[in-house]
Image (cartoon, rainbow, N blue to C red; front, side, top):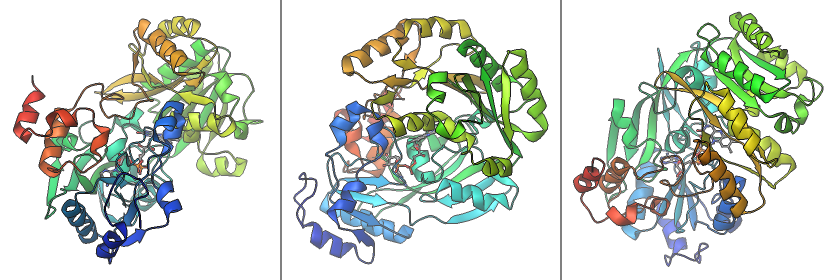
Amino acid sequence: MTSISGKTTLDWERFAERLAPVEVITEPVLIKKRSRDFFWYSPILNDQLKRCFGDLVAVPKTADEMKHCLRLAHEAEVPVVLRGGGTGNYGQAVPLEGGLIIETTAMDRVLEIGDGFVRVEAGAIMADINRALADSGQEMAMFPSTQDIATIGGFVAGGSVGIGSLATGALREPGNLIEIRALSLEGEPQEHVFRGDDVLKIHHAWGMNGVITEVTLRTVPSRNWIACMATFDTYDSCYQAGYAVATDAQIQPKLASVVDRRIADYFPRLKGHIQPDRELLVSYVPAENVDLFRDVVAAHGGATELALDDAARQEAGIPHAFEFSFNHTTLQVLKSDRSATYQQVGVPDPADASAILRLRADLGDDVWTHHEFYRLGGQVVSVDLPIIWFSGPERLAEINATYERHGFAVYDAHADALEKGGLHNADYTHLAWKKRLDPKGLLNSAKSAAWPKVKDLSPEDIEAKAVE
Ligand SMILES: Cc1cc2nc3c(=O)[nH]c(=O)nc-3n(C[C@H](O)[C@H](O)[C@H](O)COP(=O)(O)OP(=O)(O)OC[C@H]3O[C@@H](n4cnc5c(N)ncnc54)[C@H](O)[C@@H]3O)c2cc1C
């Protein structure tokens, strides 16, 4: 078996044999499929990554099988990329240097459900975790809109916020991630347990500094969530209503998404259910607080068009409301037109709707804003995930510059290095733990622009850079 990536010289047929009894995928077409994620949202990343493939896929079913994979990868010194559902947006799971892809989806057991927590294997699909929790009257504190295919390990290693984060905060906030267990990539893989604040040493490191095998997560009592949709004449009133709902201590929503009318026009499954050509507010509100939601909408001149519990939603043939929020909004547009893309932008003051009005006047017709609210340190914050009609990298740079001129920070969705997107800077704590858990630098190393500069230092010297 020759190298599919063209980047490695290993005898992959022999390596696959040695992996037994671990299940392997050897068909090139399937390996190529498992080498992709949702990087194609970005035409820039698509050009960079669409020809990057791994050489073999292993699908371990137990921690012992996982250890066997890691032991052999260490011995053969092959690059390793972990893969869950492959729904990341920045090519996090693309094997840039070829090598072994380890898919976690067969390690999917829900191990323990307690009061306020659930302990699961890393490959568990999040919708399955929520289903398993239902009998105990609980739900995950947050989940991404990709819950039907994304794994908890992928969310912890690659995600940041989700549906629920307006109530419970970002994934990294204290108490949301209770414990992470991770294996090192060494001759004899070791299990490391991260608890409390220490979970941040491994969270959101794109699988670069350890192989997550088990996660204990915060759960919250489940509520009868009503999917609410309201429409408005102007984006300004829609945003102000969204912010008022998001910050209202009585309403207690777990989602509030403000969507430009031109984006809402790309939601065919809402046609006939909401008025056309209106700015859209999407929210989840506990049943007992829906009247308060209606009041806020009315006070901002809007109309509450839908307030459906899950049974009524299904009967009406309407998708989950979260499919019109976060990055699913982009997906709805991309389903019709692949020339769309998006960006990730922080709003400096979420209460200042007039700043958004001024910004929108300065952005061209090729940028359609979409705001999400969530909680950080107890405060409601706002991010813009606009649809951008892509006409080239130069125009994208101009759009980014417009945002920045208005004081809005751009977290570039078109960069595939860990330090260039959400983080903005190198995380030397992540890198120090990479040196400890992956001394040969085999785990997804090409995703870190900073790793080559520190890889020969001791973990302590790398960590010291965090305070320099
Ligand atoms: C339509 C759409 C909507 C989205 N909405 C959200 C959202 O609301 N919030 C959000 O945060 N993200 C969102 N995302 C991004 C993504 O879906 C989530 O981050 C998701 O949880 C990733 O899970 P996954 O199993 O698909 O991970 P993958 O894409 O398979 O992997 C993600 C990263 O984690 C690493 N990894 C996977 N498993 C392990 C493991 N066991 N140990 C170590 N590293 C591992 C991979 O190497 C990769 O770097 C969205 C993406 C799409 C396409």
